[in-house]
Image (cartoon, rainbow, N blue to C red):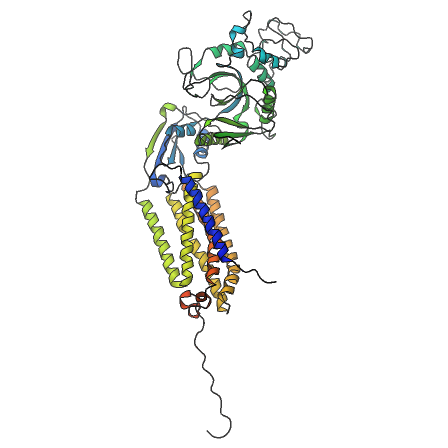
Length: 610
């Protein structure tokens, strides 16, 4: 069976098409850069161009463990990809210093992302400014002090024929004695203690004890309470207002800071939209943000804009609040109760309502999304805050400082590093041209191709993954020059060995490649593993060095397989190379073969005298 003939021309065409696609993607990533000084320029790190420094001061002296945990969470938020090389350090016993490379256009948003508590909770809406509902005290009767839900909602409330009591429906009155004078339904539980008070003074349903029996709060209780909240919560709701900035104000017009206790109802404001903020009365938390399995920013299907997609879990390996089966099951129960109604549930982040939608479907898999007027960066910041958890400490807003800082290295360090890389590259090229002659052209072109691929990927990663180029990163890129040159040496020397055995260049290229690629792949695999170890276990600049080293090693493999080898196979088709011309680098002199012509032996004369 005939061997398959190599087609180097076809491989080279495909390679250059791929290179064109790469630069097309890079051009698209640079299209949004409006600063005329930064297009087609990689993002530089703190050591080369400076950036923004944020100093956070804890309100109280935290423990060392809490301070270190807060530092770790903030580091994950600002450097989630591991290549942005933002520096997050502790200072003293109360401060955390965050240094982010580059100019920050929206410093307030960066500050908010860094110090956000990220306490996410799902609560049920009892009423709001726009829908007073159960909080409309004008609907209460006889001084009972309990608001009634609108008739349309009351009809959707399954009460099994029982008369509503003070803030409790059938799901919340198990074992409770009615306190508003209504007669208990005939199918009421018969296990009510005989000494139960009849005046409702001690066993009346409250926000903390929905059934008046001291039992733990359940999701059914939250649903029942949201449809008929207790009087104390309604009274508290009436004491506050929301300003245009979404700040909760007390009766005197001063900013009020209510504790965001997951076991108690909450009065909260929505995030302002078009200069309007809505006030809500919310139930206890039915799902905690700590029960999220994942959070990611994305675009909605068949839609525009950005949303934060969240996934809740039902893991039995961890404890869930209030002994529930899990966030997914609790959320499904709420969606079944609210589906098809106008009742709302609220997504509350750090005590502020970021969304209060209605249920249009029963959510059984725990997957939903937080929607709003998000920009891409806002959605990414929120997803990172939720994914990496809540801060264990709170910071003092008045003592938070934000400032611009200069580069930590002298201004000539970058030019010195680039100059060193250029000199090394030129020396390698000159040596290869001197030693390999014609084949040295392959070395020069391969190094040039590797350089432009590296440049395009650095630009692309700067915009898509936040990669910043530091001096250690530049060192990792310079090392690639030696790694790539080593690949040529192994391949070319294999070809020369095969030709010393008398094979033509065409045959020598294929047989030499079969042996050289095994050696080269093994060496590059070791290098990639080394870079991976540095990237996973190191921090800061060393992590960036490992990333740059791994990136350039992968580029070396790609260039070797898809450019260098096809290029050598293509040159083998030319007579100048295949016949061993002096300038090809494959002549007998260059190969070290014996070129001295052998002298013919003189024939012996037989018989007689000379």
